[in-house]
Length: 472
Image (cartoon, rainbow, N blue to C red):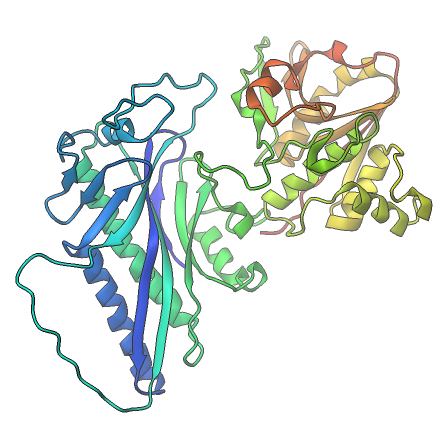
């Protein structure tokens, strides 16, 4: 488990190469020292393959093929080694593409500030040019162990502005070679007899200016058994030890990869912050999923808004690495309330509403998360809670569930002026019933900034403010 590379964080072009490397070796002896030598020699062979002229990198969704160790030979010939690395993007498939395979310069969405990712496949040429030699067959009879597996290479580098293809791919090959060295260390460290644990490269985005780093973990070893390694990483990068940064749930999600569950993540990031006199913006920290009416084949229109707000909160704790359990469905939420004695058994499967107090109980029962409840006797008083809400997002950074009357919402942040008292609320609305369309969600205000008049001025409200556990 070692850091293999470090990148600045938020903009530019990322080169990401992935592919299996076949790891095969004969262990003629069960002597531990000899086995380690054989495995190390096998890793040296893999490094030689990566440095050889047989190494080929193909750009996904494009006709571009690159031989990085042949003077950076590239096809098509229109691409030269001294061209800017970003030129490769023009050859990647898109909706607007000419017959030659080169795409037109599409105008990027005004709501996309993510880095461009060039995905590459690592391959090895199976044949070489030159005269053919006759095969030679030999037979050796001996007892030995044959180890055969595939190691999942996953290496990234970020290109600088106007960096050439030649320079960028030279850095990529160095990073790839270094990753193999770290994979060797993890393999040897966790070897048990003749059993190997496959080394698993994972990427984590740390707070600026540290950026994106890669760590190699042994696959199959749970996070609970990697606490010492994480502690070393926290010390190395001078990170606080009261929150996770290197659990598997913290793994960086590349901007061009869809989420398997289909839910939107962090829709608020595309919004423009409101401007207040001497105001500051305080936002949720980390990643959450947007849960709303009618998702997951569940018709809860008209009664499930608090359930959906709770699911958004649960997704935050799961995606920050505090818990491993999946986001609970409605019935599991209802059963939890029965288990704590808050509801009768007939509550499970019903369409009864829940409120902030029930949300607090479920978070504690299912996730072991404690929460603070804020009571507001009428909506007009919420405007005076700017300091408390700002402090919550500054110190805890969790989404807040707010319930009043028959409605529930999720508060993701506030813009607040200490001098004037002006306040705006960043609201995620669980009453949305449409598709997972970021443009619709943000343009129609289902995720957006709201003024104090958003709340019913005469209704009372309860707010559930979850507290993050002090773990790493």
